[in-house]
Length: 243
Picture (cartoon, rainbow, N blue to C red):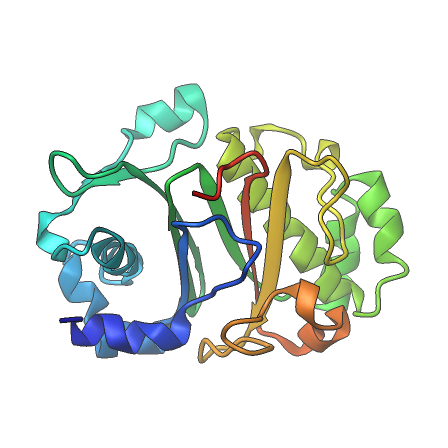
């Protein structure tokens, strides 16, 4: 029987047919943290990010949150080796799941998968901020942004979340120059790209810019997302098996 937390979490899930199988993603507004009881799952993280992650893992493992072993790299590991994802198991014989977390003022995002995954969430920038941010991205993306339907604030935020998700996936963090990473501004994946990305927009209540089951930029005009409070992007390796 599913817990009330799992049932309530459904409205904040992000699903899409392009995502790898055995991947679970949720984007949750801060206002829902207490209602979902996420802080209770991890009392040391009152913001609820770890609780959101544990709630997703609990469903994937079909096990209570208190049986899940979440292995976090030591801070010095990030310093020496770059971004290292937390891994999770639920005891002997269970698969190892990889995780990614992201936070923005007023909203949190979490992803779990059987392969490496990266997720990022950012508040939508103003057009002025977006123009400044675009000076830091790949020249091809900067050029393409000029022809996008949406304004520079949304387009720059979308590109930046894709970059952040990608460097989390690769494990480099922003020690790698963002201008060296081409992520694209359109809905379709870049040809022959090793890293695939999807982006959604959502408001401060966690409502996405389109339906629950078809809520990536690939399903709607990019201009529809320019009114979103947040951009959320997820990245994964294109060779990740969907099995």
